[in-house]
Amino acid sequence: MKIEITHKHSNSKMGHPVFLLDGQPVTQAEGLSAALEYLGWTRDDLTMAFGYTNPRSVHRFFLTKEPLKIPANLLNMLAVELEEAQKFKVTKNETK
Image 1 (cartoon, rainbow, N blue to C red):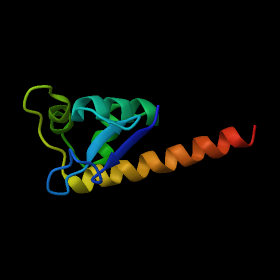
Image 2: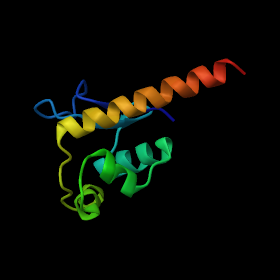
Image 3: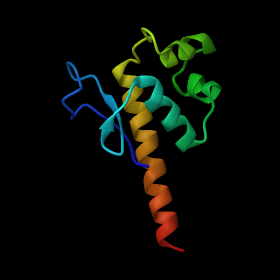
């Protein structure tokens, strides 16, 4: 599965990135869950990576009704983490 966070999609509003799974837009909660699973992170790991001290702030990003919108700068940081992890996995698989 390819996970992407991009602002270069028609679902992106005012430059705010959206999650794509295999090229298809998904909800913030679905995208975040897939990204965490891919990276092997927990919600606590995400809390620390985003620089929050209260895990409840991150929990609100996963709500299905009226989730707290993730700030674009944090989504961009997560996108870089995913890109690096995907490069590493491709390189690792190519060397086998």
